[in-house]
Amino acid sequence: MKTLKNIIFSSLFLTLFLACSNESADIESPVEPEVIEAYQAINVSYGSDANQVFDIYLPENRTESTKTLILVHGGSWVAGDKADMNAVKVFISALHPNVGIINMNYRLAGINNSPFPMQIDDISAVVEYLSDNTSLLTISDDIGFIGVSAGAHLAMLWSYAHDTNSQVDMVCSIVGPANFTDPAYYESTNPSYQAIYQLFGNPSVEFLESVSPFHTATASSPPTQLFYGGMDPLVPSSQGIDMDARLTELDVTHQFQFYPEEGHGWEGPNQTDTLTKISTYIETYIEAE
Image (tube, rainbow, N blue to C red; front, top):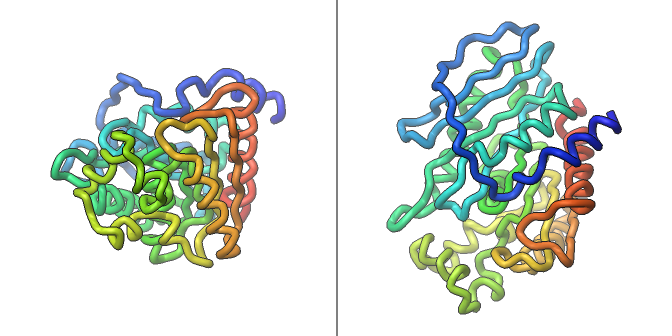
């Protein structure tokens, strides 16, 4: 297993952060899987919009205790595609073959089309699909999340504020915005930062708090991983530092890894460190029954 990890860490992740792909797949309708066989379906529709699709990968010999990880891509809420997370899917499948995977698209925001609640509603629809089909798919309704950038924000927000049935066993944020009332965002004249508020419709502070994981986390929030870079041009370093402090204050099980010299994504030894820590979290909170 250690050899396999080293091979994967050294070869798969040039596209881990905000990568783009032109791959396309034929639409398949889900069919009842054989319990003893692996099962996958590409571009399963969960809504009427073209972006409301996901890919599902379920392991062979799964049981009603098999948990599923949901992957949420980045793209500043206005771009990106589930293909950007294909390398993450390969990583999980290779090292954790007994874990189910959902790689989801969601509706993209734009002018007069706020990310919230639209994209949170899309995550809710995917989770509901899994919950409604646990018997058909032979899986548990327990889930975890791995999100990158805007996808990490959405994964944390859903896990903290919208998981009404306590289904989330872990959430991993890789460079995810966490607090939109942070002065580093809110008081900045950086056009990229101010564009976020325009995208959300220049809302009130109360609204910004309602869509910030920093403000919606509670003492019952699930185990959380946080990975941030000190030189990130898109997400202020205070986002990770403050989120770490908030989860510590709430006594939430979590892990915070800060790479002072890294930006909005990284390669080399720090990437290997990130992947090793994610793998350990999957072993602890998703594979363990």
